[in-house]
Length: 174
Length: 207
Image (cartoon, helix red, strand yellow):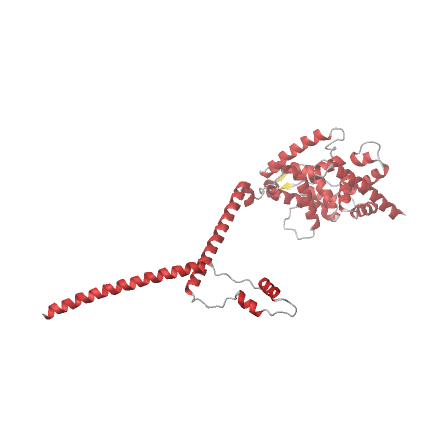
C-alpha cells in the first residue's frame, strides 16, 4: 500500500485506492446551492452579557445568600433564647459521677480501685448548662428588680394621691 | 418562487471538480495559517449576520459535512441533512466562542444531526429548480459501490469517517485535518489503519 498516495495523493498512485475512489465517487457530494436564511442568527441573553458581568452577578448572588443564611440563623437563635426565657425551668435530674459509680457493680475478682477507674471511664458525658441560660437568669433577676421598683413607685404615687383626696375631704367637711 | 428569491441570498453552485488540497505536504504551515485566518474572518463576519460570509463557509465545508453525514445516515438522507446542518449552524453560530474551532463545531453538529435524522424535521426548505435537477441527474450507484460503502460504514467510527472523507469526498489527509480539527497524525493513523481493516474485510468477502 502506498501511504503517500493515501495521505495526500502524491507519489505513485495505488491501483486499489484509485479503484475504490472511482467506485465510491457515485456517493460524492454534488454541489447544491445553499440558501442562507435572511433571518439573522438568534442572540442569546448570555451571549450579550460579558463574562465579567456574569462573574460579578454570581458573586453578588453568593453574598446575598450568605447574608440571608446569617439573618435566618440569627433570628432562629434569638427565638430560642426567647423560648428558654419563657419556659419554666425544668428540674431534670442531672446524672452525676457518684450516681454512675453507684450503678456499677463490682465484678468478682476485680479490685475496688479498678472498678472505680472503669466507672470513671465509662461515665456518660454530662451536659453542661448553656451559657445562654445563665445570661437569661441574670436578665430575669434584673427584670424582676425593675418590676419591683415600678410597683413600689406606683404604690407611692397612689398613697400620695389618697392623702391629697383625704385632705380635700377634711377641708370640705370643716 | 419570486418572493423566495427576493428574500433569500443564494450562492452560485460549487464547481463539480474537487478543489486542490488546502495544504500541500511541502509547505503545510504557511498555507494552513492563511487559510485559517481567512476562515476566522468569515466566521466572525457570519456571527455578525453576514450571509455572504456564511455562504463561503458552506462552500468550504459542505464536502466535509456530507462525508460525516454519509458515514452515519442513509445515503438518501445525506443531501438534505447537509442543508439541515448548515441551517442549524447559521442559527447557532453566535454560540461558537472560538472562531478557529468552527470545523470541529460544525462536525459535531453534523454527527448529532446524522444520529437523529429520523426525528421529525421542523425546518423545511422550498425545493428550487436547480436542486431538483441536481437530484434527478444523480445516477444510481453500482451494487459493488454500495457494498463497499456499507463495509466502510461498518468500520469503527474514527476510521469510517476519515476513509469516507478520503475515498468518497476526495479530500486529502492534510485537508481532512484542517477541516475537522484533528491532528495530521491522527488522520494519518486513521487512514492507514482504516484502509488496512477495509482491505481485510473486502478480501474476506471476496474469498
